[in-house]
Length: 416
View 1: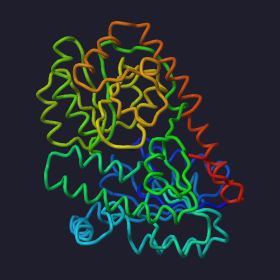
View 2 (view 1 turned 135 degrees about the vertical axis):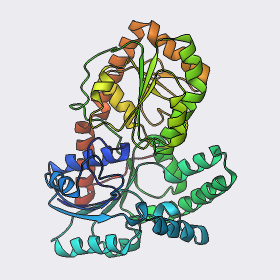
View 3 (view 1 turned 180 degrees about the vertical axis):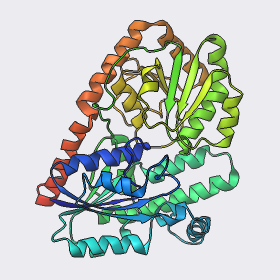
């Protein structure tokens, strides 16, 4: 099978943010059995960091892809271009989330591959907004990935935002996104989302579209379960801090949870792993005793190995949290908010502990610090779940079979 993959970010390096990690792993799984032709944006200010060059990324991707076309994502680097997209969204009917990815260069690159390559069997579009302009010119089956139920996530974000002007923009964006999803999802032969919860949201948006769940996963060979414990006084969080749910989570934890928790447990430390820390959070952390900003790490495993508890105080966003799957694969007991573990088939007291209010968070962390048998049980149960359901080896077989059936005509939609 020849598969054309259209990506909104550079699928390198592996230790990028969650959606990148998911997409890269799924592409690598599909490449085991099929030819991949890749058209991808890249961002110099985000993707090419810490000595990573475009050529090194290309050489890496050539291990998996037959042909690669890389295009600069201009709005991410040019404030004027980004501002123009915002203005177009404000005065028009299209959502900013779709406009930001539209470009004649991307569309031309896709059409060039379709013309040059004999019989592309399937086109994978990795987020909405990339290809709707040219769908009528694509004869092959088309699959669209939804890393989140975007309109539902945007509405939740608007509800929680305290800035009146931004709140209004986000509500308008949510309405436009919902209309855009309803209009364009039906034009794809298959829509792929990451959880049953997201599927329910997308079905509400348009009940007539074919939707399947391909879960987020974890590379169990990378995050091998090595320990139960580590330093019994060390908490850890990881996630890109320029992604607003992660940023909000750490601001919430540092302002509302940490003062109570650190007062009760005087030797407790917290390490925050994540790139692009905003100034507000950096200033807050500087005032907090025993919190370390580790920044972006090429390899997070040494820090994870030293931690005893993984925290996930996320209160916003959508999809599922790859950070939790990584912690589960590594054997670290977890305390998470309800929203933080949404979409994963986890149970409170079996796979992790759930806490939403600051006081609850302190109680659950305290339980794990004092109860080694509870830590051991949560660790073992979570690891077993990851191996059975969320390993990329398992998920890779699932998406490969799904796409092969779509191409052969054997696909039958799973009932809602």
